[in-house]
Image 1 (tube, rainbow over the protein chains, first blue to last red):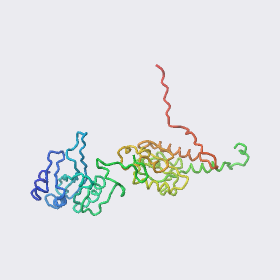
Image 2 (image 1 turned 45 degrees about the horizontal axis):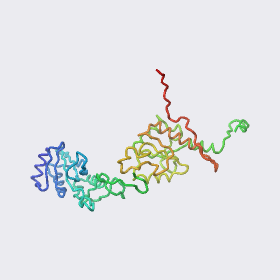
Image 3 (image 1 turned 90 degrees about the vertical axis):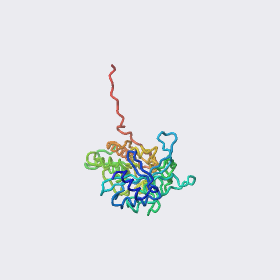
Image 4 (image 1 turned 120 degrees about the vertical axis):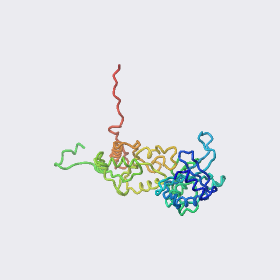
Length: 175
Length: 183
């Protein structure tokens, strides 16, 4: 199935309020999903016999922050979770994106939240830990959401565009 | 020691204790098996037959810091690794020496500006004796670094108040430019 066919099929199954749209003009077309229903959509994507996306190639977080002086600045600041899927049975692939606000609360800097898909694809466990560690996305229902690359007592999420580099870490000068 | 030379029968060698210990130490610098990143591949090449670190008595890579004299920090040191590097250094018996191998270990290298996780030079964590620059350094450069460590060992004085006098390297690495004939 092509991405357009997958999108039509998903809309029939789950409705327009869960499947928000299709970006067909992009070089790598992707389907946009409402973040709160990503677990339901993932379950359908894996277990439906016509789709059966049994392999999660990659799960990553992307920070889009509006930078005024840059030309390629994006218009809406957001954090995206990108799911790259592949089906070994049907040999088709799909990109799914979920858009989140950069912070759940702008003043208190609480992390944005999205349901986990680690119950659907087990590999998402570590991928979600990485996205939590580096981009700062909290995955609701994750069995063990700890930092995976940085040290346990690290402050901040380094791949955020507004990340402040530490001046020192355990007595070692940083900058 | 010319006054004592030639006064004994053959196969009897006269030396000073200082020279004997320094000779023994410099001819058996045992490095620690300890590679952090890509520089470690080059360090393995130095240990392998082509460059043959064993010629200098430094080929016995020890798998424990307690038997090692030399720590070759080969590769990027992250903040997470820094405490382990420090602990390994402290577990080594005296006298101990450290070579900082490669750009990352000397000063952060390509990670200096944007590497949020990289220690900007391993000399912020452990005292470094010899810096070997390069990304990664050629095996010859590491051999040169080990020879400089040997120089440092040879300069060690046992007496209480005698300062260590480091020898000038017999070749400094500086290439003399060829003379160009005036046209």
